[in-house]
Image (cartoon, rainbow, N blue to C red; front, side, top):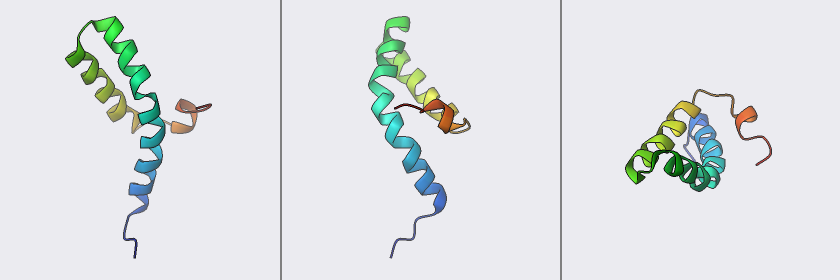
Length: 62
């Protein structure tokens, strides 16, 4: 029996497109910042802030 909550399903649905975009986001952040650790931090911030965003507008077309 699957005991997952609907919130878990929504998180999984958001994680899939984010993971596809993660390398692109990291590359952009690295080119701007010039530091692997800072680029990682920016990508993590994008994930956290993205949890409050309207994902239909963010991931449209991916």
